[in-house]
Image (cartoon, rainbow, N blue to C red; front, side, top):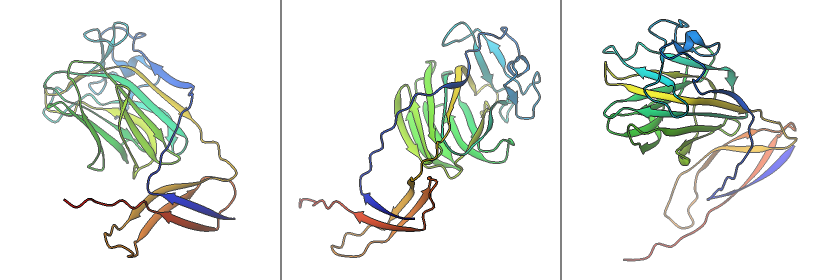
Length: 272
């Protein structure tokens, strides 16, 4: 099949869907002071050792809803040893995956978690999320900052990752406002690892109302996605411009040939 693509310099994406909730945990079913992973059939730890120092405890010190949350605190110089993991049941590579939770970070303290890209923990980090002691939140992939914002300590923050794995668009939403989206070089997700990264006493945070949703990708008959586009900018009128793009056939019908038309809006810069 041959298809034709018309590319514009400005692209607008509108999305909206109603998801069925696959998992939610408001922490209220656990006993105060109990180990989370030891009390749950879903939560675990990095080394699969529930009930040990890798596990985290239920606390009534803070709560977004109800009276309980999960307390994460570092007690050793290298961070941890708490290393709590929530598996998502499988490795997701397409469809729409949404992860959300409430997080409360102590004043002058830090918080950290990461998404694992494969079902085997420790193979590939999909994204790292840092809440630093100076009040900055940042999202990284492989050390590259993809999104950042400031946050208010000792206040419950509504954090959502809305991930379109089919088109590789990872959007970060804080308190209902998007702080950015990015293409992930490791575009898959299988679990979240929550680890108090800072040295002893320098990490202190609580999480509550944890959930994740998944909507499978329904393959259409014809659908071609623009995965990435790179241009070599030039200010010389009439000069040729290099164009590099990556396409992904999301449809059932094979595509063997593609025509691409590139349209660029020209704007004039006033002389000062």
